[in-house]
Every structure is written in structure tokens, then in C-alpha cells.
Amino acid sequence: MVRAELVSCGRVSRLCVSGVGEPGGVEHVSAIGALYAVASALGGASGPLEGLWWVEEEGPPLMVARERWRWHLLLPAAGAEVAGALERAREGARGSGAAVDRVVVSSFTEGECVEVLHEGPFSEEYRSLAVMEAFMAERGLVVNGPHHEVYLTALDDPSPRTVLRQPVRRA
Image 1: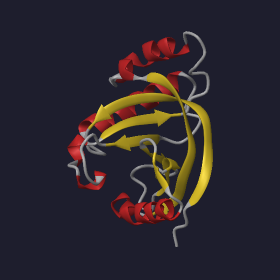
Image 2 (image 1 turned 30 degrees about the horizontal axis):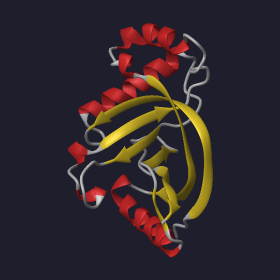
Image 3 (image 1 turned 60 degrees about the vertical axis):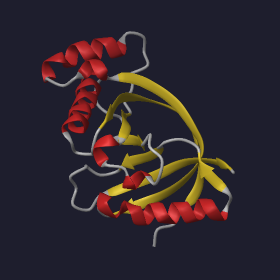
């Protein structure tokens, strides 16, 4: 049984690449490659891959064509905020063939969030999202930022585990 909870998320800094397109598509895969190439040049990732997802169309997000989904892919990497470190890492990663110039450092604070642990295929996330929506409705909470996913396992893992997080505010 999936259980939602209210959590508070403070300020974080991550390597970030933004884009538009379906998960697993050319743009998405290229962005992941760029993140890992730059993180490697910085000494390696210091946490799991994350994604912020949203659509700019009216209606339920899961009803929007996946090629129009917007995202920021995020990867924790120690030392990324040190002056000049990102530029040196991008330069060192240029030979990887990835679009490393698109990688930036992004800092943000989500604040109050509804969170669940989704265990199972990404195609079944809608079930966990429904639990989150019911939890929010019961407590008078509304969406207050992009949907956030933290990939606890590799994206191709046959039994994926993903933290689903939704920033919220009082209605």
C-alpha cells in the first residue's frame, strides 16, 4: 500500500539540464549523458538522478503528449558550486560527445511537499499519483511547483523505486 506523507524540503543545489520531450527519448537520454559526463569530471555524482516534470497545457498532465513534457534533470555533484568548477568540468567532459554546455548549477527550495515511494514500473506511477492527489485534497493542499521524481534505482531497473514528490501550499 502506497502511503503519502507531508515533508519539508530545504534548499538544494544540483547539476541541471533542461529540455522538452518524452522520457527515454533522444533529448532526454542526451541530457542524462551530459549530466553524468560533467559529474564525472567533478569527481562523480553524489546522489541519484532526479527529474522535475511539468506541462504548459491545460488539463491533466498525463493526458498531454509525452513529446511535449518539459523537464529539468538534476544530479547532485559535490563541488559543483565552487567558483570555476563547473566550467572546468564541462571543459574536461567535452570529449564525451554529450551536450555538456547545457549543464548548469541550479539551486532551489521546494518547501512543503507531499511525497510517496513508488515501487514498480513508471507506467504505473499514475496509481501513486492518485494517492498523492487524494492526500492533498483531504488536507486542502494544491500544487505549488513542478512534479519531482528521485530515481532510487537505474532507469532501466526491472523493479524501479522512485520517490514521487509534489511541492504544495494551502488552498
